[in-house]
Length: 343
Image 1 (cartoon, rainbow, N blue to C red):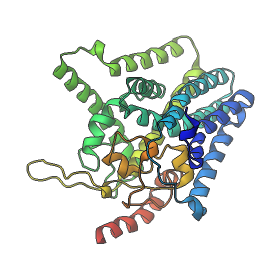
Image 2: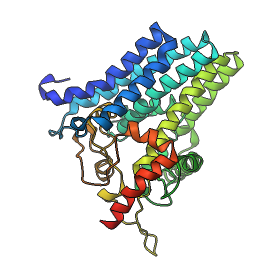
Image 3: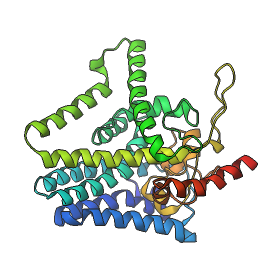
Image 4: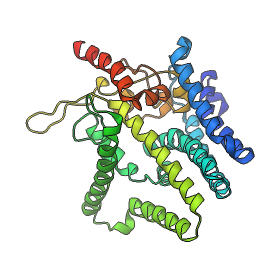
C-alpha cells in the first residue's frame, strides 16, 4: 500500500482489521469471553453512534484511494483464521460456551465479513469477486452473490424485491419472506443466466459453493463433531440474521413506483435509508452511505458520498437493535416516514 495516498482520516478504516484481530486474540486466549467481547464492542459502537454528537458525521471522501481496498482483502485471511480458531475452540467447549462462540464469531462474520464480501463483489476485479464468494460461502449464504447483484440492485425498494421491507412490516415477518425469496430468486436467476450463456451447472460458482457447504456440514455430522457442527451452523445463523436485518433497515417502507407497463421508477436518493456515523461507517466500510452506493454501485467504499436522503435515527449498530423490537422500531420510524411523505 502507498502510505502517501492516505489521509489521517483514512486511518479510521484500520478498524476493518483491528476488530477481527482483537476477537481472534480472545478466541485463542479466553474462548469463554468471546460473547462478552462481541456484545461489548456492539454496545460501545451503538452508544457512541447515538450519544456522541461529534461522531455522527464521517469525513468526506478525498478522491480515489485504491490502497484502501487492500484492507478488505487482508481481512479475508483473518476471517478464515477466526473460523478455524472457533471450530477448534468449539470442539472442547461446553454448550453455553459454544453458544457464546457462535454469537461472538457470527457477529464478526456477519457484520464485517458479509459487508466486505458485498463490497468486494461489486469490484471489477475477478480476484476480489472470488474473495467475496469465499466469504459468503463461509457463512452458508453464497446465493447472496447472485441475488444481491442481479436481483436486489435492479429491484430495490419495490414489492418485487424480497430484501426490501414494506411499510408496517416487522423484522420478524420480513425474515421468512426475504430468506425464502432470496434463496429461490438466486437459483432462478442463475438458471436463467446459464440458459442464456449455454453453460451447465458445473460452471456455476453458486452450485459449487453450495456443494462445498453441504459437503462440509455432512463431514462434520458423519464424523461425530456435533459441537463443531453446532458452532458452524450457529455462527452462520448469527451472520445471516445480521445481514437480513441490515437489509430490513436499509429500505424499510421506501417504495419506488411502477407504471402500468411495468417500468420501475429510477432509483433515487430517497429510496434508501442512510447514516453517516463515523464509528460504524469505519467498521462497515461506509455501507451506511447507502443511497450513493445504489446510485453508483461500482464506486469503492472510500469514495461514497453522504447524500441528503432519508436518515436513520442512529447507525446500523443501534438500528439493528431497534429493529429487533418492532414496537420501538415502528415508534421511531413512523415519524420519519411521515416526514418524508410530508416533504
